[in-house]
Length: 111
Figure 1 (cartoon, rainbow, N blue to C red):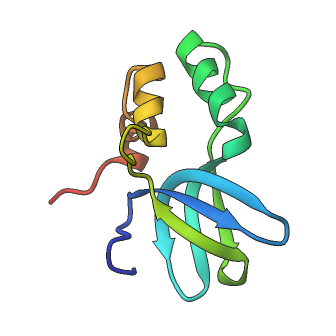
Figure 2 (figure 1 turned 180 degrees about the vertical axis):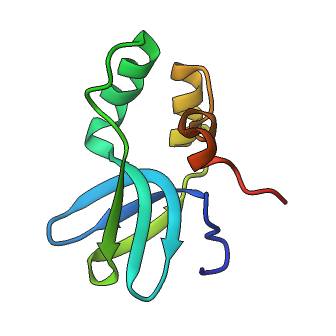
C-alpha cells in the first residue's frame, strides 16, 4: 500500500477512459490497480436516501477493480472546511457509519 492509503480507508477515485468517480472502501492499492467496495458518485445521494428510508436496496455498493492506467486520482474522503466528507454525509442521512453499514467486511482497521 501507499503511505496514507491504508486498507479500509474511505476514498474517492477518479477514473479516465471513460471518466467516472467512485466513493468507497479501499481494499488494495498496488502497481496493478485499485480494488475497492464502491458506489458511483452519480448514484450516491439516491443510495443514501434509499438506505435512510429502509427501502429494498436497488442501488448497492459493489466490489470493483480498476487497472492503474485508468486511475487519474485517489483522494482520502476528508472534510474540507465547511464541506462534509461523503462518509459524514452518509452517517448524517443513514444514521450509521459506512464501516458499520458494511459490517465485518468494512470494519475500521485496529490501531
